[in-house]
Image 1 (cartoon, rainbow, N blue to C red):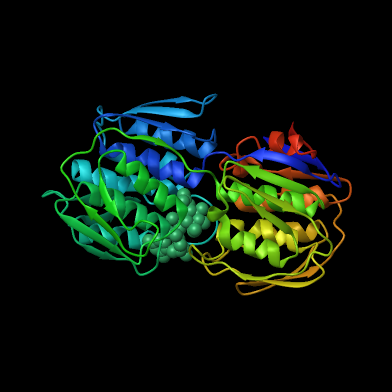
Image 2 (tube, helix red, strand yellow; image 1 turned 180 degrees about the horizontal axis):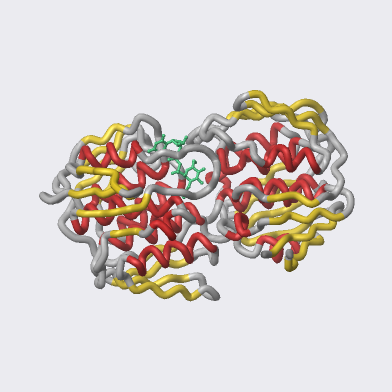
Length: 421
Ligand code: UD1
């Protein structure tokens, strides 16, 4: 196993390129299942979750080739010979459930192990299943697998999601592109990653209107051509670097991302007193004294993203006063709190609300990463902590951040990857 060793207290300064978004790349890769043709996708981040996705595609028979140095993947959709996403892969990455929509649409059958993934709550898939049922699919759960069939093919219909779930919207959208007739997704998720998936599907010939709004309309067809697409930038990675700069009283510019991807997060940073400069394809956040406390609640886009909650909490430890952070998307998403407290943070949890009293001087310690975004918050805190912080179990981090230590080193951080017994 590996760990990250951080010597805190170095001011971060400079520019950092943002990678392609993991959460856009995953559904887009699964969408290649919809076509028999060859697809080419660019700006793919080199991450553990991408490797897992390629293994799922290859377990289904597809041939995929990842040029990691140049960040592109070519997929041949022709040799699809299986409809089963196996347990060993799905348990490491919950997003594997996104094979359901494409496989049902193309083959009329799909089998997916009930998902595992990040330990941030129950995370059921009932909304995915009811949306696909509206298109004519039937599901049974057997031996730990979801088995879906649509012997007569999928038929376009109205799908009303009880909550704007990102994954359920993606499954519904992908399935509807090959369903017969028109489909409407009501109460759809509006995240930038949904917009990117719709763009990718459109490059395959799909007819989609309304992505980015609550109602998406899809005119289904009988086949799709290969995909040609470049993945949108990672807003969560960008926010992580902006918080990293601010906690060290520095100034960091994230390159290759429009401020429109981060509206609510940038508003919060501004409320905290940071100087935010919005350019057409980059964002700079600079520290200004004092850092004020925040009061925020996670919500579906355009609200504040749950995937940035832990990083903002780390930053809030250095604000003057009490910050209040409410997690409304996932239960059990405060696992970073005890570890932040080990570094000296003063945080109290009551239900889904965390109260952070700042500023508290942080001192280096050995801490355990518990999930992907929790790992990022520990790094941010470590950058501000006096002395040496060791973040263990960084395999969580490698699921979602490409070469984070190299990018932070280039900004002036003292952070190294080391072997951990
Ligand atoms: C995606 C992101 C994840 C992000 C989350 C919320 C990917 C690969 N992952 O996850 O990083 O944190 O969006 O922005 O893109 N729910 C149900 N039943 C369902 C589906 C969801 O009850 O069938 C609930 C979940 O338990 C959760 C909420 O809805 O409480 C939101 O989940 P959802 O938007 O579906 O998140 P994911 O797509 O899993």
